[in-house]
Amino acid sequence: MMEEPVIAADRVIISTAVTGSVHVPSQSDHLPLSPQEIVAESLAAAEAGAAVIHLHARHPDGRPAFEPAVFEEIIPPIAEQCDAVINITTGGASSMTIEERLAAATRFSPELASLNMGSMNFVFSGIADKVTHWKHAWEKPYLENTYSHPFINSFDQIEYALRELGERGGTRFEYECYDIGHLYTLAHFAERGLAKPPFLIQGVFGVLGGIGADHANLTHMVTIADKLFGDEYHFSAFAGGRNQMLFCTHSAWLGGHVRVGLEDGLYIGRGELAKSNAQQVGKIREILADLGRPLATPDDVRRMLALKGAANTRN
Image 1 (cartoon, one colour):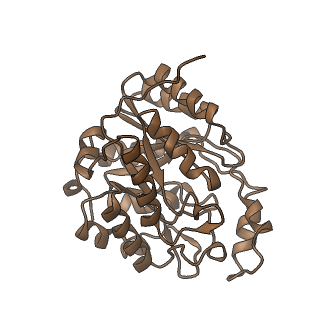
Image 2 (cartoon, rainbow, N blue to C red):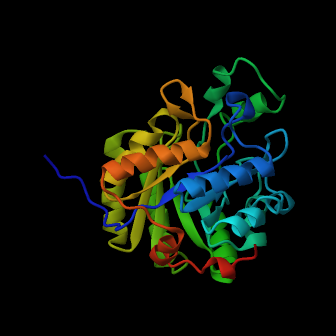
Image 3 (cartoon, rainbow, N blue to C red):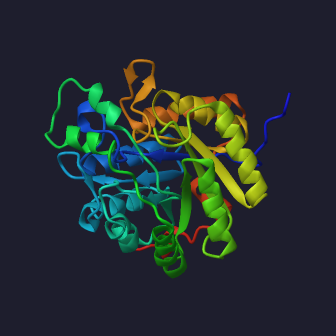
């Protein structure tokens, strides 16, 4: 029997993805939509133990937002009230242009930003089959559109983000890898000197069009990451939907980091909607305690990932 790889992280980083752009308001009354709700959820998640807050923004009706003015109602209040590392999305939504997707991160020059490492079919149209009552007219077409429109993250777009945010602003990245090939894409940009270690690799499992939520896939992704990046990376993992906590637990058991939040899964248990992001943080924190894994503080994260510090952002 082959032994599973072990990731050497002394403390585990809990990231919380507070709202995202996949789930729609009709799925849960607990999904934060307004800036005030997103701020409150972020602060509560940080209080519960999250060291990194991964942020999207939404319009009042729940539609994904890219406008810096919307983020300006979210990011400063969080930064003023807690010291969590703020991680701004550059994924946004697949309907946005790359300029729109980078607009908030360009405005704020955060310590950390997400970066999707490849074009893919990113399909969540199946959600529409499960919703019986729609709150807003935009939701169903938005979901169904993902069946026919791929999520484009071309090499020139990845390079654009690395140069605009990384080279010019000192932002580092959460490299979101939805398949094994995305690791090789990261290695390509590392060889060119555009992506610099230590890398934070976020393995994402269970998205239709990406790598499946099979635990052997998590082990395989870590094995390839070890081959490509040696001891110059940190690994974190989650799976969308019902496998969310299982994959976080597996990642932590291997010695890696975890990501929870209502962006990735709306439930806290079988058939039970999570009432908040903090509730999910509390659950994974209990699991980590059982595994004997100490939590990383925001300052630990800054050390581990060589971040530039909150004082060097534009909050």
